[in-house]
Amino acid sequence: MSDDDAVDVEVESPEDAETDASADATGESRDAARTNGTAAAAAGDPVESAVGDDKESLADAVAEHDEDLADAVAEVEDELAEARAELLEKDEEIDELTSKLARVRADFSNYKQRAKQKQEDIRERASESLVERITPVRNDLLRALDQEEGSDLRPGVESTVEKFDEVLADEGVEPIDPDPGADVDPERHQVMLRVESDQPEGTVHEVYEPGYEMGDRVVSEAKITVSADEE
Image (cartoon, rainbow, N blue to C red; front, side):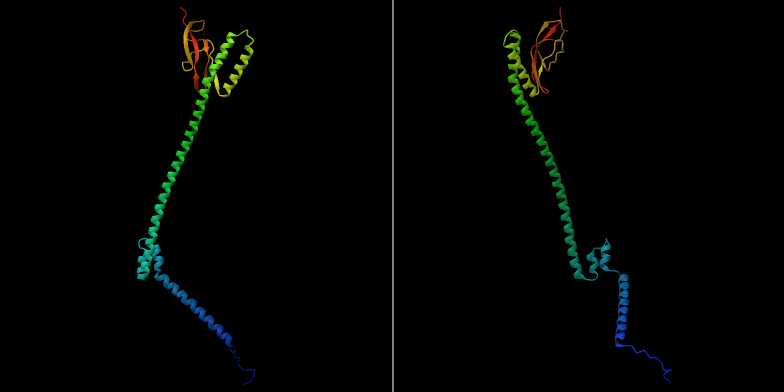
């Protein structure tokens, strides 16, 4: 046989042989894994089955395969149930405390309003008491003006009355001084007597002494005379 007719024979090195063996082993492992996975899927995972089944507890499902593990699972389930019950109880307690807090806040708000109103009432009564004491002085000054028309004291008395009026105005006090012919207001006027007058019957004839009011409170009624029917 000539050299040209010789058959080429490829000799596989040891490294190539080891690589091929490893590849074959890897392929076989993958095939086995696929086979095992398919078998597990067909048989069904008992844990997953128990979780998905509402009618059967996880412990019951595990008990079919491992009694000891089932006891541990049952204990965990009991602890979970207790924890859920405690959580529900805590939620109810939180709701109750929240309701109590809301009531306390409402009560405190009402208390502050009552306290504020009480302070305002005290302040008004104190001012009212002061007005009751000083308004007679103003009335005396007014009478002095009527009697001292030509006196040298008149300018000083008039100035004093003006200052009185400024102080009273600052305290929210207004004189009750109805004009002749005005209707009688029983809440603000005190009728002293009835006199013959050219004013309509039953109306104000003259103011004997002014009254005073402070906001919606009448401190003192105006003393008036009322016109009577002329006979």
